[in-house]
Picture 1 (cartoon, rainbow, N blue to C red):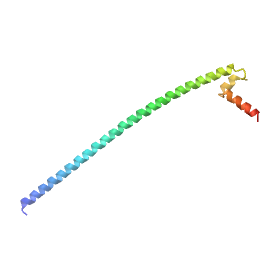
Picture 2 (cartoon, one colour):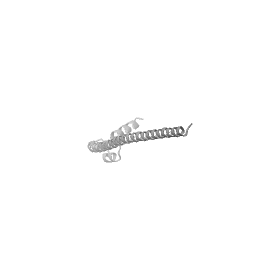
Picture 3 (cartoon, rainbow, N blue to C red):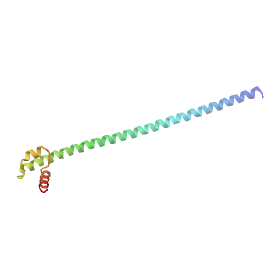
Picture 4 (cartoon, one colour):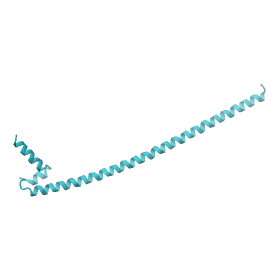
Length: 114
């Protein structure tokens, strides 16, 4: 083999090697871009989920506030009923300690039947 043929073979080998390296770098760059896209998609999904969670939290706080107001209203009505009820021995004390007068009456009736 002449020197010229050897030089041509070496040059072709270097060109092929260079082309392979270039293709590998492009593939790697493409994979990096795909991962960036996946990461962005995951971030978007996380933000959406966080927004839904915040909305649910706010809704539950609002619902809890409505429940507190309803409970206060029920307690006020219970106090009014206790004030009006002629059968209540000490209406103020029963309402103050948080017991339901109707439940207490039924317990007393049940216990006296035993």
